[in-house]
Image 1 (tube, helix red, strand yellow):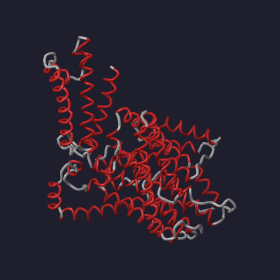
Image 2: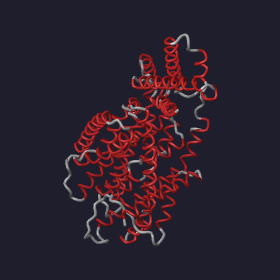
Image 3: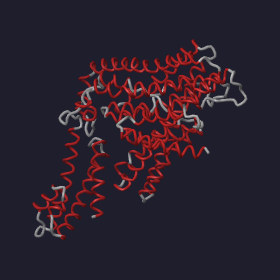
Image 4: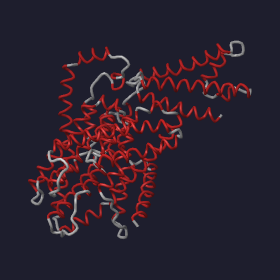
Length: 545
């Protein structure tokens, strides 16, 4: 029966996603609201997945895809705000929640409060990044947001594991929290690097694009399970593997890139839809558990909104404090930074993110992107249970308390921040007029890429002319090449065949030059990807003609 419900849930989540897009309403929020309403229908059964199993299913593909899209290069450029948000703010949030709840709630100890803090501390990768993409947030904001979502789960799950071991009397793998965190990070990263290098070697052996794409889709699950088996961070393992494999993007064939692009877009949509539908379906049943526990519903609701307030406010306070410190440091070292950048060669430091630090407006937007989601609820459901305990026991009350508070925080941040973020973005960043073509910081990169493309085309044409100077009409060929509609400009079948072959050579030369420039960091990775996408589709068209 569970498999039937799972298939039905996946199907309905995709249908609701399509409906939301048709209504031009954020699909994530639409799925949560609609599935939440469905959960209150009397005959709808309780459908739950074990928290650890849910994390193993959801996190690996989404984190792997985000890591490959982000790239280690971009991560390095924005590493300090990413590390600050991903590690420091996660620890601080968990600690403040633990102190507050243990002081106010009688049956909640400090370690129980720390479990709750670890559960609600990390903003969700799926929620924030999905909504941010649709709003068209500035690139460096999305880089920070994506990078944070790649590492905050590792910090939160480490705190969670330690707190659970302390609270329930389980023996932790390593007794020292600092050493445990160090082990999970270093070993997880090592396994990720090893798996990434191994995957690259296997990808080179495999020739069929379909098989390469499917094999790559299996990698994040294998890495995550391997890391968890040795008590390392599956999150960091998957992210590191994604960064390593991303380096092969500019070496892959056009057919492999197209296969992987289509497959990962489908995977992202499938898991995104499932995640938010699953969150909504838990509404009624968590409320039922609250009633069965005998806890005061009004008090629990008040505590829930208090934790929600902490989760929302601590992010802007911490982030704006960091922004003030960072801007003071930047102003003090501005001349030295500009001198250093002027000496750099073959780098896109300035053209990538502009000659200014992250602005106050962008930090304000970042401070409002703390939406929680499936990681919060999945971790809450992973709190240990003892089958024999009664509903009056402190253990049962603690688990129900954590689940109810987690639901309030997850749904509250999704609805409150998710619904107001578009308005806030429009007012603060003025996204409709945010970047004109003249203001685009990547203008220089686009110009470089266009010159590379034109130089490659002219090189092929010149080579053909030198080989056949008497029969090759160079001026006419250049005119036809610059005209996108080749078929309508040529009437003779022989001319069409010749130009199709020549255009194929031109496009292949352009692909090689763009790939080489991207590998050598001579042009921005995103610009290279845009041009390679266009080239890939042209190659398919010319090969089929």
